[in-house]
Image (tube, rainbow, N blue to C red; front, side):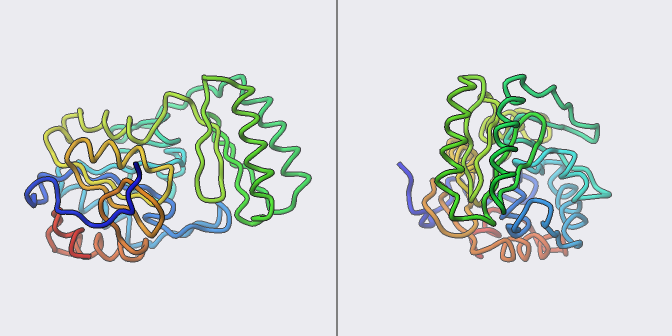
Length: 262
């Protein structure tokens, strides 16, 4: 059952920075939610700060997002981080380009239906990520029920190969096998991450399986903002998280306690 996310004692003793594996969502976590995906703006101090923290953590830092890895690379340039994009459908470990599989054939018909809906309704935005497709209605909130019904119908037509991922004023068709929790679990088995305490920070229902995976590993799950969640701790806003990360990169230590004190 989802809990209100009231702070609890950490599952393990406070760890030094070298014992943490840090996983960070992007939209609504590292950056504020924008009216459309293209309107997102990043604090230009952040990529360099994350690179400093990655080095301090022995490489155990990854971005875990619904965005494609290529977009994350563009936003974080000139740095490239380990990343799980498209809700875990795309994983890049190291600095090489992330593999991009061909889109599922079933998505083509779904895309055409989504385009017809968007063309008929001002403010509806389609985000085609090739392996997944998102429909945004943040600029047209009155269409929420109609948009969600469309996406539920398309998911039912496609069948078990794809699933419907809901978020804040968005619904997305994603590969059924993909999840942020699965991506985090896989990364925690890799050399740079193994044996560390996972910390995952996210802001949306799309992050809940990531929180659950971290909770199961006796890690630290942190939700940005309010809302029902299985995360065990909270930070008020992306600004609050950036303050934590920038301060740690500027010479402070990065421990479990660092997050719990804010």
